[in-house]
Image (cartoon, rainbow, N blue to C red; front, side, top):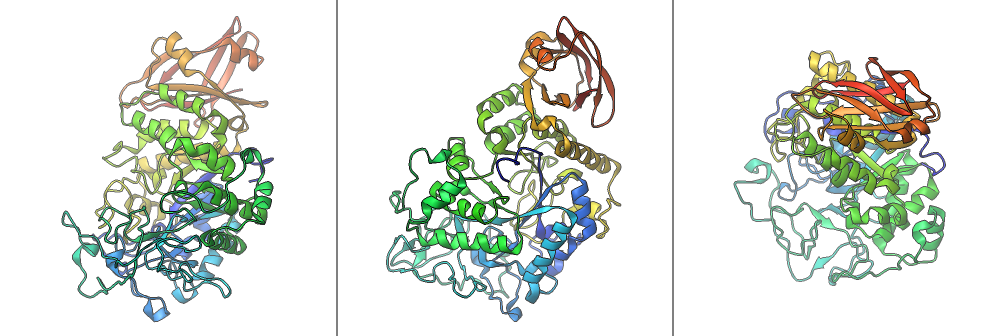
Length: 596
């Protein structure tokens, strides 16, 4: 969003794996086919379904897995070429091995020949309900058999004009292993594509001469089974030895606006891959997409992002740009030089909360994370689940979705950044299925599979939670209360004050399994407390230091405070400019107290 309004209201992104959302088939056969295990469609996102998502407290929906990636299901009668399962992961294919950037996954359409029109209709329904939508762009790699069959006239697919007699040229889209032919990995530990069910499929026939570098950077003509063998790496003008074949941004450009970045690139020659991805992004913007989530953005030079994102913002400055970056040392470059709106706060906030939820982390570290990222706190997206991470309710993580509740309060309220949740998180989905390629604890993005707890909310496409248990209803109600409060709260877009360390040293009964802080704006003052302890209550007198009491301009007296989520009341007593609140926190308990 534009800088002048981006901090006016907290945002909530609902990530949904599009193929799985409306699938009500409960067969869940390992390596099952589309016919056996079912698949969700664009049409499953009815106005009723989208309204329920919005009512959860959502402002944006990220439709994951929309671009046309390689699929094993036979769509050849629609003019779509078959894919070799020996170079794809899972029965349904990887959403991060895109085969055609100008079209959408045929699995998602009721009528595959009209799949793009069906996606346009989904965009219109999404906007009608009042939600904005994101899709993926995967800049570092494309499917090993990228075709770009739907590329518009006047544009060209990746690799169309490459000189593959050279291992590297600036305007080649791929890197080549000259003189060698690609070979599929040597399968180990009992693994076989499709679980070994290859007899009736076109398998092992894929020919690639010369071989290309693999998406994760492997330069072997026969990559390892654990490499991203289904993809090939895009060449952004980075020579094989690591030097750059393009202009660097001048010193101080991190302080410049996207308009200045756009002007900078106007008279520069840039690698062909930059232009292709810029054209792809503008194509989807023209269709009505409101933003992009960039996969593994840190594997692509930050100068490309300056070029790409400044073009996007020039087209529509309200476009939301979210990037997957895992190296904290790169955060500020990708925000300021790369002109990203938001980055995953994975290795700082998420990892800290995960360790606390699992029982061995200390809440002390939350304050350390917040202090270290204070200058970019708004740009660091908070989440507790996504398609790459373990489900909270899985036995490999916490084993109980309720353990995520105090962590979600902290994640959603400590900063002004957006919050993201993953579909099924709100009903405690544990991802226990044996899907095939995908492993338990993460809902598989590679297989045709049902999502059992979430299917109970879908309730045969009534989208009313009619089959949820009481516990699942209560969990979803918690998320609905919390998220709706966050998108309306003025205080959560205001100031922050750490109460944790003061109370840890001054309040008996307060320890490293509790976390507390204050948030406020002119018309709203909040005291937020979470207990991460699973089995034990915490009873203590929460102390509010004189500095905060003075900031809030509270005179001596008794002030009513009320929990905004469930309505319980308490008292804030101010004496001699010091505040105190008697707190009883149940196991996994939390309060968001508003000073009335």
